[in-house]
Image (tube, rainbow, N blue to C red; front, top):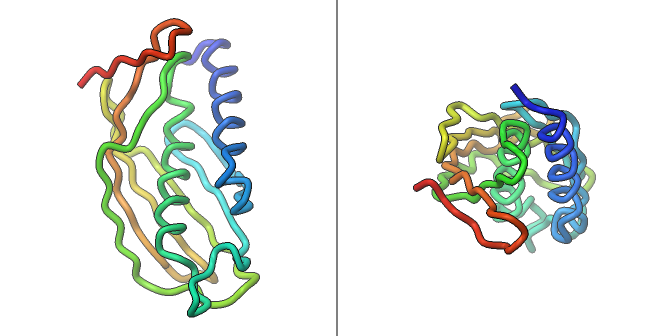
Length: 152
């Protein structure tokens, strides 16, 4: 059961993730977040596009990873974080053009003590754009030294 300290940690960590420079530059919006689920959106602009005017695949995978991490954050205790240890993405359909609202949904499908398994989907205009699966390593931060300790 999350403690008030954990709830505050969730809130602060979520704010930290959303304020990361690349996330700010890409204009992500948090639509929803709860333990095991999160949804973010972006509206395509020039910063998201390839020379052929489609959403860049690297940005797609970056933001799907972010949605999965945002789904995991509420399951973490104060002093924990997570890092992607493995990932696999399938890009199925292009997103062409500016001004398209792209939705990234992340979910935690299994949460252990040292690893979490996540899945996500990307959609635009009712069409599945991409899917992904990720393994996140749970990291416990020790004190204020910046030292981390993985349970792996």
